[in-house]
Image 1 (cartoon, each protein chain N blue to C red):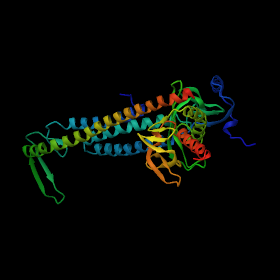
Image 2 (image 1 turned 180 degrees about the vertical axis):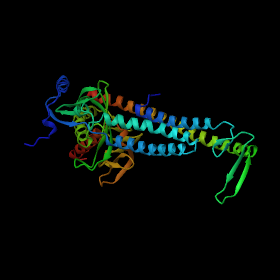
Image 3 (image 1 turned 120 degrees about the vertical axis):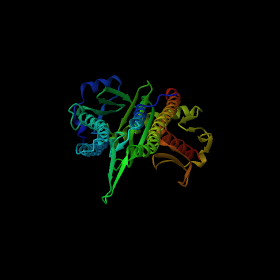
Length: 276
Length: 118
């Protein structure tokens, strides 16, 4: 049997307690906190840029151009927060901080526990009321397009945001979205089957089709949905020949977009099975 | 109006801060001092300008004052204009963030209907 190295680690007691309080079931695997490289690189870049200019201006001021001091002071004022930001991120990252190396996302059968600086909190997949996913193109072998940032609101009103600067989202993002979709789909379908339309952002799923801003696209014209990455990720409808149809919707601003896509697929499969 | 997210507030504050820096720089340069080679002049001073070919030009205080007074409004206008643009962008960023947050809240409430019933 093959085990992930992270899975072999001992789960801390506070995580186990948090997981059992929410009945999360058995522990599956854990993802360590990552060093936020994009934040480090960008803050370091600005520190070096403004720092070099500030040093040059200071040197210019000392060799005679007294008024260049003004410029030097402005540049040092810009350099200081960039340097503080860089050091703040670096010292709190797992690369340097022993405490940060203890932070992890622990995935369980029915949810996950996030142990981080602000505390340890447990979430159940079926408690996620709204999930917004910002997608990115990854070259990771898992998938070519996985969420790099996820914002969640739970049924009890808790809000959590998890980004690629916290944990390896190429792995955890795929797990999280798949599990939440699995938990939400039966609820959405049950509500829909009682004759209720369901709204996902600008899109409303009805018995007759999907409405976008009051314009209905009948089921007979819908072949499926797809996500296209342009400047951001957009959700498109495709017809039975695979051609894009209708309006595009910004996927990152759409609550429960994955559930919507799965719901459309389920309804289309039912219709095909029913001979429509 | 819905409260924008923390990231939006931080971004808007950064833009507003940059705008404020431009206004401060404009305010610093609002004085009527006359400069010769970036050094303040007294009315009795004469400014000597030596060109690259060695040609010398002597400028009196009133001459330079007239020249620099003409440029001052342009500089002030440019700095205030850029500062104003940054402040405007900060405001726009906040308004757009609030609108987006309101839309997001509406979606969360809409999801509550089928989450609870299902």
